[in-house]
Length: 273
Ligand SMILES: [Zn+2]
Ligand SMILES: [Zn+2]
Image (cartoon, rainbow, N blue to C red; front, side, top):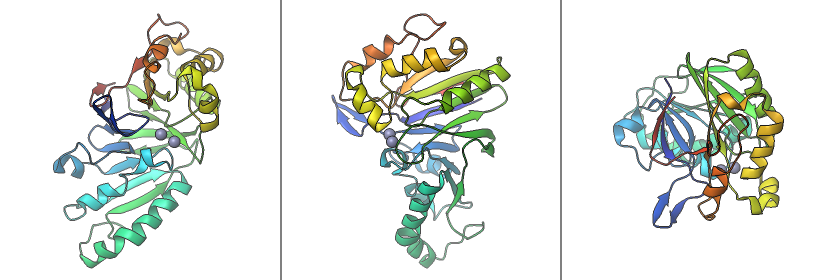
């Protein structure tokens, strides 16, 4: 089973309409973080120590801000390193940050973590299209349409699968991967968490910055995905600045599904797939 605890799913950060919005952070089965925009904000010490894997989509701060902070916050209690996975450009940035800012005093503390470098953090590059086993899941990275090298991820266990788009605008690779997946194994439950940051009136901005609007997503669903009728879709990464966005998402027509089938990811909810 894939159990997702939504620690953050906002396209922004801070207080909007009296509610604190946290950026993209999804805790899977207590052990794997999918993006890390707000990994420390709502977990207690034991829950932080339970995380051994962090899978990152791309090098934007709303997705990676706490990736190094987690090993930093837990290194004195750790008996095994945290492994951070993602595209190479992002890992270089994080490695630099770690080596220059945190490693010197971790080393001075003389705490040794069993592993290659006795370090509380290690990095593993993922390549688009090459599946890897991570935290018990088969994980397939997929290039998506967003500034910098950005990945979406298909996570599979025996019975179900989650595709997380990260940040993306209209794209072909993602829908090809999902079409092939559904055709190959029509009985496996597939859930898609997909970025819809901007309302329909800001399509130009969405296209330039690599995000979907509800209408842009509706076009791709119709033209690029072979059987969306079997899939559960959830919109995520909404910017809280636009009050019309939720209604527009509700109006998205998913081929083969009744009106109103596009759901919203809700912060602090737990989803079991
Ligand atoms: Zn981004
Ligand atoms: Zn983002």
